Amino acid sequence: MNAYQDLNDGLWGDKYNQVVSTSKKGTIVNVDGIGDKDSYNPMLCEYNGSKVLAFRCESRNSQIDDTINYHPVIMFAKQDGHIWKVDKNIVPFEMLEDPMFMKAKIHGHSSVVFGGVRARLVEVGNFVADTELYEGDTLETVERTPFAVIKGMKDERLCQLPDGRFLLCRRPLDNHGLGRAVLHIVDHLDDLTDINVDIDIPPAVAVLQGPNDNDWVGINSIYIISDKHGTIWVGLLGHIGALDDSGGKHYAATTYKVKLNDLVGGKTHIMDPTIIAMRSCFEDGPQKDDKLSDVVFPGSLEKIEGNRYRLWAGLSDARIGIIELDDPFRLD
Image: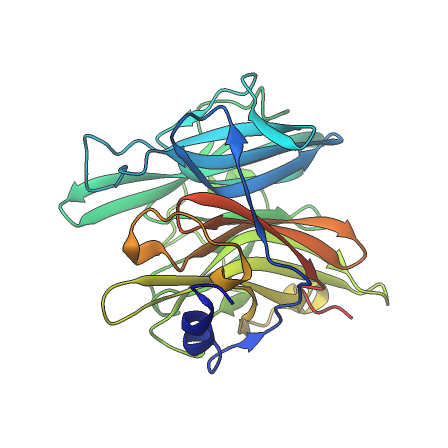
């Protein structure tokens, strides 16, 4: 048991289904080449037979309400033996947070779509976050001017469906409720250019929530997966968040799943999360500040074999963690 166990069990145990299936505690992954800065909120990008680790990098004192010291950067690393080293061939994205990645066929051409969050301080204690999306043949050559900016929303996620359309996950502040994630299907990525999210978004096909109205959810990655019977599912890796009475934040990694045929069938689905990892599942480490000690911000799932995956996650806004999980989507 580590310092987070009692807290996690008391916070999440009575409210959510839990499938924490791991034989050993998750470990911290360090990135060589970032000096004394912190690395966290990773996204493992797998394409063209290679793996690139995108991650958020910044100083421990970098905070959005501190205009002098706030300077997040998305950087990239590749594995050299057992060590992850910054890849100097991929230019970092300055002032972007929390990377996202998708492979796609766009107009018949294989492309990568990369994204991140750009936050702007409006006034003390109040900021606006936009999701910026970039496109290119590879991460090395991705265009540095975003082809789409989804204004007023952070951590939007995309996945191309087998029929060529795209599943868009967004976090609206509308009639679906505060802190809920909503799935939509869009025909083309071009539909996201100059989009007015209050007018142009098609109807929701799913609403992702939790049983507690005070908790909030978000999606970090979307996957097309299949079970042993050949049924195709949409698997979603996400997070559930809550505040305690003293203002401390608590995040756990979650999954959702829905059959693809059900998702595209024209009915709106209400989906609750299953928790797959909490901070107590990982070894101890530093934290950005005291209110962020109990945070797991999942980035991506790396398939190992069968239904076994490696979860990549940010820990306490200060480190990257990995942990191996059995069947996080509960397909068996």
